[in-house]
Amino acid sequence: MAKAAKTKPKAKAKAKTVKATDDAFIPQTKLLRLFQIIAVLKSGHWTIQQLADRFDTSKRTMYRYMKILEQVEFLVETDFNNRYFIVTSDDDPIQAQFTLDEMSLIKKLIKSAATDTPIKNSLLRKLSLNSELDSVPQLFVKARLSKIVEQVSEAIRGKKQIVLKNYHSANSNEIRDRLVEPIHFGDNYQSVMALDTQDKVCKQFKLDRIGDIVEMNKSYAFENLHKKTQTDIFGYTGDADTWITLRMTMRAYLLLREEYPLAIPYLEKREDHYQFHAPVVSFEGAGRFTMGLIDEIKVEGPDDFKTFIHDRVTKYVG
Figure 1 (cartoon, rainbow, N blue to C red):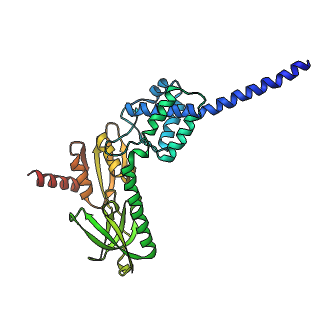
Figure 2 (figure 1 turned 135 degrees about the vertical axis):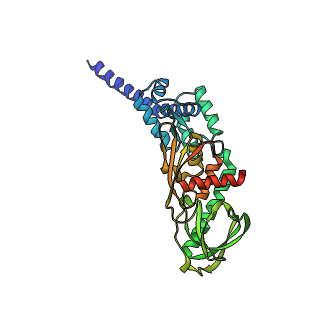
Figure 3 (figure 1 turned 60 degrees about the horizontal axis):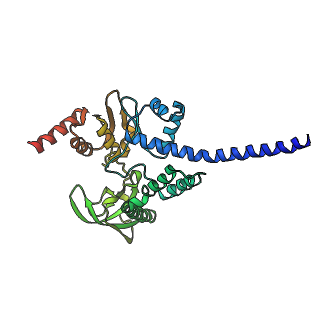
């Protein structure tokens, strides 16, 4: 009896050790499964049931994986047959690209797996090629814009004038310096509303069109003329009180949400198309986008916008 009493605790301790190993392996298993799902969704369109069958799991679990992918900012969409896929674009960096911090964490998780397998080593090699290191030019662009945002923010806080060096105006198609009094940033810090001291008018200036910022040791001189106006989805300033409605193909829908993220809340998937219904300040921005995809978009309203498109097409086509 005494011998049996000594043996039992050892068996229990061994079981506990095995459980700890299993628990430690769970994150690696889930991580590998996520990579597999990403690869499948980027290569085709799948229903939840097809995904569940493909990965030998339940539909409920697959919905949880879809939620995780959305939380880490993958653009997961469904087509008109309710099949899931991950949206990618040739114009923008691949959405599966990881930041350096994310790469470090993922590599630690994979390396902590107990066994060395071909898939583990393959993943580590591929991850090394799919990080911010592939996007050094984009990093420099982001760093430059961050500096501009910091300089403009400081000028707004101190109520100081600044010079926008070599600003490229899309309206006048000219490049010149602008002495301005910055008032506030636009949505997503992509632009700044500022008073142009030359014509005393508040305008929106795109940050990516600014060559450099020259800080002036001079306070606001025309603060009484400052107006905190809003901009519409397409970047035009004023009162967005005219609503337009567009019937769109999936391609037009994807391009609109990529080029103008503020349009996303105004997009809706219908039975066999996508609909965009939103307020605009001017027909100019929406008109340019529509004419650029004239065979992918049908203008459903208002009549004034239909006339605007017709007149522009007639003007350029003859």
